[in-house]
Length: 118
Image (tube, rainbow, N blue to C red):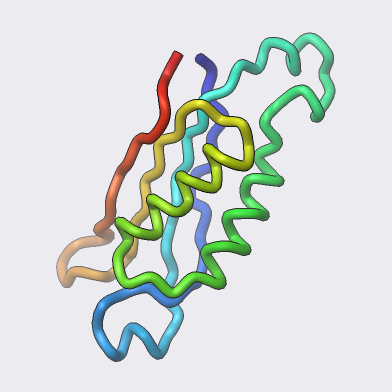
């Protein structure tokens, strides 16, 4: 299986459990790795034959900007569901972090894998 990836996708959203977090937007950072077979696209050199990472980014940005989850775990799971369900991807790994969430740490977050690697 090949991997198409997006790294350091920064999106402002409402995320967090504290009252003050519910009133502001914070930046979450996503790294996405998506399983794909790129051989047909490599042979044809045509965008219709591959996983269009720009389309994935646009969909995820729109979704995350409008979301208001409390937990990064929930947000990561919902992003995985979109990628698997809407982009015909068999496997996805998502690293979602919330920078500045813990004093003394650059970032904290979750890494999830969903689907099946071939």
